[in-house]
Length: 237
Image (cartoon, rainbow, N blue to C red; front, side, top):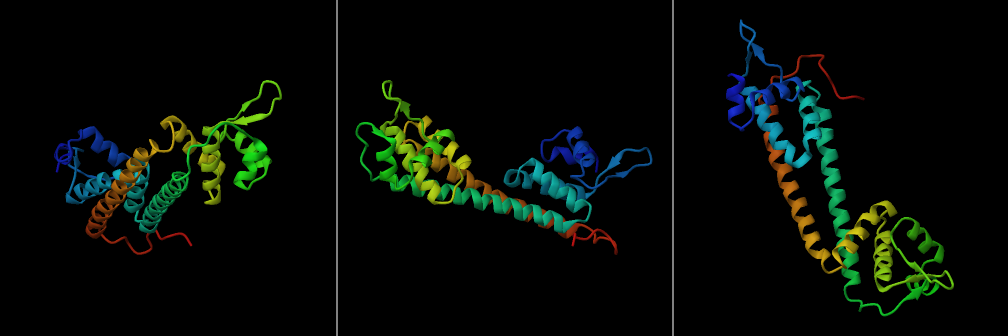
């Protein structure tokens, strides 16, 4: 099988096929008497496995998985897959935490007027120092009273503080919460963010399905690979 034959099935260039081989994504090709690359069905299965892994694991991790398989380090490849699944689970837990925090905020009526750091801290059951720490991390952005210099929290600031409080209670770090608060602000509040969460959920589900597809293709490739020689690579102790 020529490089062009392998490339045509997936709409790739022959250079892409050569690059994949050079990167270790495909096993080394045989060579004709004139030095031309000659691919076999095993290479076609490797290419299908790699392309199926990319949507679920990303190009870099998919590359590392295939490199590990092709050097007969299957346990390394499986560990990379497990790490991807672990990251996906973390992403799902983060989404659930955000959804729960927003749900807890939803029944509360719109805050009226401004408030100061002491009353807000008391309302949330935290210390004023905590609110100041959140301010330094960008979670809340109170303005300053021109005459007194006191922090003044608007209704939007109170909303952000309550959302931060919910997420902190869920165990999330300030650096994890800051981008979520930024999304609430850019969306103009909590309600418009619901469509963003639906899109987030859809992407996670698509990634889960892609991982299943990638697993099936990789399993097919593993089943058609020759057994490694005795004394070959083993998993690290």
